[in-house]
Length: 90
Ligand SMILES: [Zn+2]
Image (cartoon, rainbow, N blue to C red; front, side, top):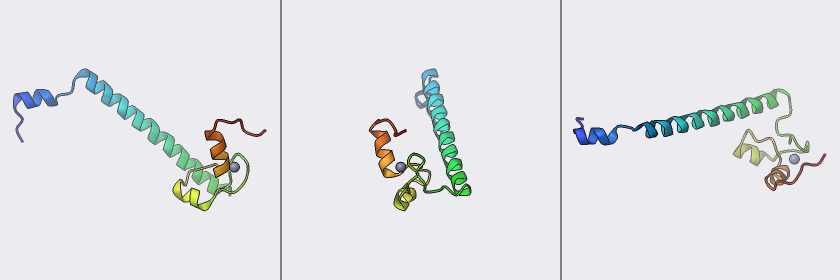
């Protein structure tokens, strides 16, 4: 498909566009790397025999919750507590 000069100029990215694209790609890479780490941790938790155990209270994480997010490390109660920003029990 041939582009006219005007279309070509319109499609060409400016320096600011390229910078924005670069930032978006770096953010995507960082969040993918973070997700990969979470997945590796979840696999380790299986190896260590602690899959499905809440890291905060030691209680069981519901199967339903693990199906929704297999990398979750908190039971519903502890997750809610963290989201509410209340301090963790010592
Ligand atoms: Zn818990």
